[in-house]
Image (cartoon, helix red, strand yellow):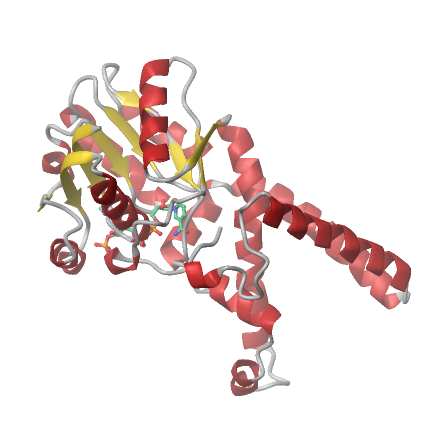
Length: 304
Ligand code: NAP
C-alpha cells in the first residue's frame, strides 16, 4: 500500500504496526525513530524497521505515511520538528488515545499539501516497549479516525484501508465525542484501577504481602490495568482533562449512591443495579469485543 512507512516511537503500538504491516506486506520500507539508544538497538534486532533514523527529520524523509506512536505529550514537539520535512501529498496520522488535544497541538505544524488524519486504534495491553508488540494486536479491534472537515475523502479512505488491512474495524468519529467516549470506556476505568491499587497499598491494616498473596480476581484485574505505562497514562489524563473530570464527577455520584444503598441495607436496589451492569458485560461479549472465558480473553493479550 505504501512505499515507505515511518514510525515515530516504536513501543507496543509502533512495533505491533510494524509487525502487522510486514506480515500483510503493506510497505516496501519501514523506517523507525525512537528516543533511546536501547530501544533503537532492540528495534533493529527484532526486525521492526529496515532502518532506524537518528533524528525525526531524517526518519520522515520520503515517507508516504508517517505514524506518531509516542506518548501524546511528545506529539507537539515532534510535529514542529517534522512539519517542514514531510513529503508533499503524504499522509500523517497518530495513534494517540486522546484526539481533541492532538488536533490542537499537531495540525498547526502540518503543511497544507500534507494530509493529517488522526487515528486511535482501540487495542493494547499493559506492556510497553519494542519487545511487547505482536502482529495480531489490531485484529477485530476498532480503530477510530477523527479527520478534519477539509481532509480529502480519498486520503481518509486510503488510511481506513490501511487500518483494515492491519485487522481493525474502522469508524469515523468527531474528536470531542471520541474523547468523551474514551473517558468512559478507558480513561476513567484506568484511573479507578490506579486508585484501587493505590488504596490497597496505603491501607496499613493489612500487609502488602497479604494483598499479593490473597489477591482475588477483582483486585488482580485492577492490578493488571494499573501496571500500564505511567508516561502514557499521565499524558492521557493531562490531555483529556475535561472529559475525564466530567466522567469522574458522575462516577463519584454513582459511588455515593451505592454507598448509601449499602449503608441503608437496600439489597433490592443493589441487586437491580448489578443486574443492569451484568447486561453491559453481556453486550460487550455479544459484540465480539471480549470472550466469556473467566480469564477475560487475557490469553490473547488484548484489552482496552
Ligand atoms: P510505549 O510502548 O511506551 O512506546 C512509546 C514509544 O515512544 C517508545 O518507543 C519511546 O521511546 C518513544 N518515545 C517517547 N518519547 C519520544 C520522543 N520524544 N521522541 C521519539 N520517541 C519517543 O507506548 P505505547 O503503548 O506504544 O503507546 C504509544 C501511543 O499509543 C500513546 O500515544 C498512547 O496513547 C497510544 N495508545 C496506547 C495503547 C495502549 O494500550 N498501550 C492503546 C491505544 C493507543 P524509548 O523506548 O526509546 O524511550
